[in-house]
Amino acid sequence: MPNTLVLGQMLWADTTQPPQPGWGVAVADGRVLAAAPHDDLRARFPGAAVVDAGGCVITPSLVNAHHHMYGGLAHGIPIPAPPPGDNETAEGWSFLSDFWWPRVEDRLTHDLIAAATDWACLEMVRSGVTTFYDCLEAPNALPGCLDMEAQVVRRWGLRGALSFEATERAGTAIGELGLQENATFIDECQARGGLVNGMMCLHTTFTCSAAFIRRAFALADARGAITHMHLSESAYEPAYCLARFGARPVAYYEQLGVLDAPTLASQCVQVDAAEVDILARRGVHVSHQPISNCEVGGGFAPVPEMLAAGVNVALGTDGYVNNLFEVMRAAALIPRARLQDPGAMPAHIAWTMATQNGARALGFADLGTLAPGHQADLLLIAADLPTPLTVSNLADQLLLWRDPAHLRGVMCAGRWLLRDGKVLGVDEEAIRARVQQAAQTLWHS
Ligand SMILES: [Zn+2]
Image: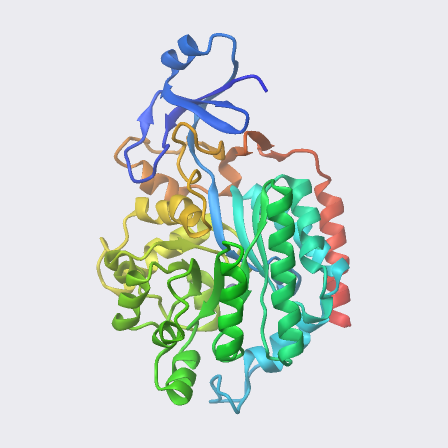
């Protein structure tokens, strides 16, 4: 593949560092060859094709470290109100066991999953996400549902880590099928190579026994894979663990002896200081979903505290509002209100969580910045703001005032997926019509 020079108004190659006005990148064979001033790149690569992105800022593309692609089918679905005063309890009304499991997850089929995946991939490309982690929970679509997702994701050319959320909620036998779905898929992806890989995933401590949790980690360990779990999304799981095991969830996982393995814990809303310390000490990666945390009323994750303790915190949409620009804004603004401190979460930290922290959480050493040798996953963001864009205000300007509508280019592994506001090579209306039909089927089945 010939070299391509992408020459921007500014290059923000590493969101922990200042941007570089008048810089661009040279790209070949899916990777960044060089990041340098325009003249240097033209001199060094005289025969290269040139993409003039003079009206744009070049940034690394975004990483959605926690998605449920199937969740798109349930956007807008009527949710019954819980009985008055009945917060989620083991005995009373539960969002999961009285609604989400029977009305959504248990009804998913391969066809519905494929339609939802197609739509989710379209949304990701349109919103600048080229790398994502997904958990699928669809017990009646086993086996083979991850293969179904992977076929769609590969067609899009996105970088996806896919998993099935294994749980014993419907018994150990179906739980084991979920674990095997992950193990088989991880093996297949490792043998095949490419942009799609697999991860191990278990649900929570209240749906998985100690033996099941250990087995999930053992299967992952044998494959060098990362294990993901949902952790303390609300006050329910800490209360459950304290009552059953005499320990809060993070301490319980530590007692099980599993946390030294590569681990990604999502949510981590109701974690106390001692749990944050364990997460940091054990090198557990965390994905933070500020908007979906608001949806379920779970509370505010102590993200500045986790970052200060040295925990790697990434960002995710949770399959809810799948616009990572909105998620970055929420991640930056909610801690400022919670801590009554406008400096609690600088804009560049939110960008860093959505780029290189996400890459690290998903096990990519060569992703998340546009350093030479790294994956050529980048965004062109229109720089036509109504106020001056400077080196010192760029992080805030992009965080607060830019959206997917301002994307002029999205590149994954050196390939353009979106140019000039148009997603390339797909019929968006056909994808929308198919997902509409799938949602109708799910809602009325
Ligand atoms: Zn989730």
